Length: 444
Image 1 (tube, helix red, strand yellow):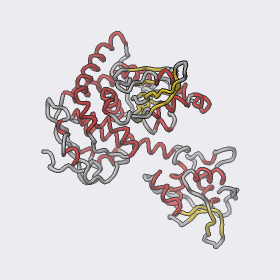
Image 2: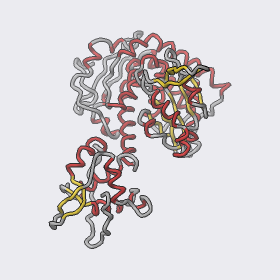
Image 3: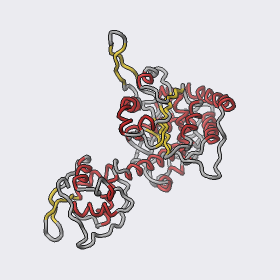
Image 4: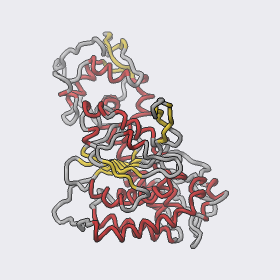
């Protein structure tokens, strides 16, 4: 049985049960007050690992009634799995939902990017694009295509689906990325509807606004620029292990079946355009992550069966995984997270000197700070990083009564809450007496 009053998906004590789909009327179970009631009493986003997704109630969401749409999604998921080895079941669900969402682009406020990245060649990135190009709406596959050609191909009424392969040749190094800043700007702007680029056209150089809104899958070796990754559903592909096998993709043999499936998906989605545009599903994440994942969750809710649960679990787990990766990246919030661990391991003192912080940061054998720059992280480097978060050093009084340059804990709290809220306490060894090296205090 369905609960009479749905609870928020993020509630920790109870599961959220979507109302059952009505066979033959995809999405009808989400109309009216039921969809509005689902947003009542929200307590916040779900973050964390598989266990945390279970505790938040996402695993307990029961299946809705199967529909024709859920059958199509199941078929597409099986087709994708024939040709590529996904990094996780959640990633496979996300690929499937993203491909179907391209057929409802007219309904979305945000066009999620699908970042298909891997650490090396032969991880299946291009093969995934081979399958997507045969199943998405109006595919436009690009390799080294100019931004001018792309935005002149995008129309507001019927935008294509961009599939950008070999993105490492566009963004692979700072020097190359600088030359392709216009492409990055185009992909960033196209994430949200009604963002235009203005160019002069014709012999009289008349200013003209070009639309940029279009869903895009971008594949390459290594991470894409941060601004693109932040707008993307990230699929981290891996090279096949021994014993893992996939079916080779052959256009002549495999394309007809994929096109038939694509056409059936388009026919199912077309009548749901207005309904999809009006839905506001309850999301297990917030802010830009919710904007990016919302089209996929709406597709899942329209399809019914197990998909509402699968979509929200994939969303919560994959967003949490990327948040954890960002905290580990030196150019992201890694410095804040590591300082948070140091303060926790020292018993949450009111302040720590710059000298002590630098020593403990460099002692982390798995951290980047001992080899930062030419001679390890300096006080000036530390000060520059923390200023990005509005944190400055000052005079702090030590336990022995002396005064040194350092950082007050209360000045760090706001940044910790915002940028590394999930960091747990770890033990940190005290600084050995007489073993520290004085640090330059210029900026620390």
